[in-house]
Length: 90
View 1 (cartoon, rainbow, N blue to C red):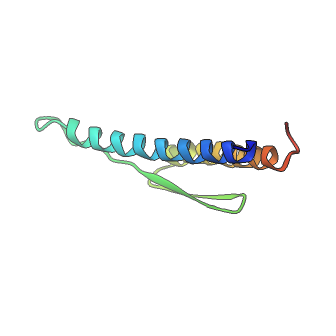
View 2 (tube, rainbow, N blue to C red):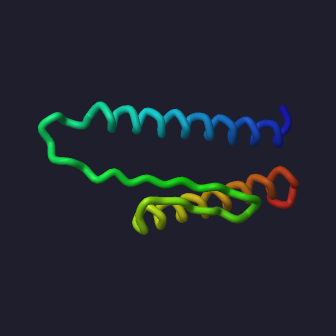
């Protein structure tokens, strides 16, 4: 396997693992909600990445800050993987 294929495979594997972990966290959070507990406030958010620009959607400013930080990290990881695969960074 070439180095680029190895990096691509690793990126895809990490992506799939993160999706599965996120799904499991949502399932556990849903199942862990007790019947006698007070109502909880549910907040959520998401990010749409168009090229290098992240667009953040969220239900509160707190969640927006978290999602924006994660989007920036994801964008930087994508840039680094591109530079490594292009041979600029070795």
